[in-house]
Image 1: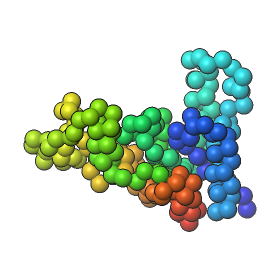
Image 2: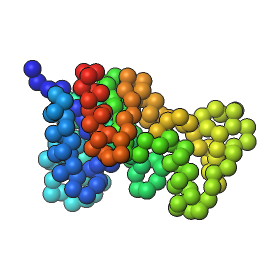
Image 3: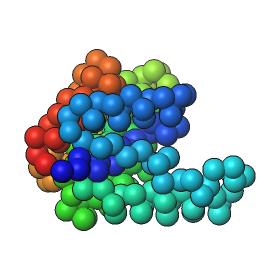
Length: 195
């Protein structure tokens, strides 16, 4: 019997030593009876091409084709580029695989609630504090707003509610741990038990 093919997604593709990181995550997958599939695994046709819109479109098509082949996904939802929010491309991939009704699991080395991440970002980057939202009950997904008046939404979730929610609706959850690889291992173990 072959191991289930699982898509490994996140801002990991942009990190230093991305290939080494994916090798370690694939080894974790193998320990739990999964075959990890990194986005780079389908990008042979783009290796050596100059950065351009056309190259990016080839990468997008290759990643989509990989997601179509995989039976499930493991998604890193760590904050991206020192902000509160995760990589937006990974959020799209979560929605894409959720629409295919595939099992999803998330993981993060920053399991704080989303609102706490937004609060830290505003304080550390700009020196501003969040404030109570007037009539917060009218919307219901948050009680604070940032200095621009934008609702700090998704109370009780580790990321934007659509991300956390789609993972939950697929039967998954967000696993958190002090390091990325520890969080990934928890998520891989949980996904393996579901497949």
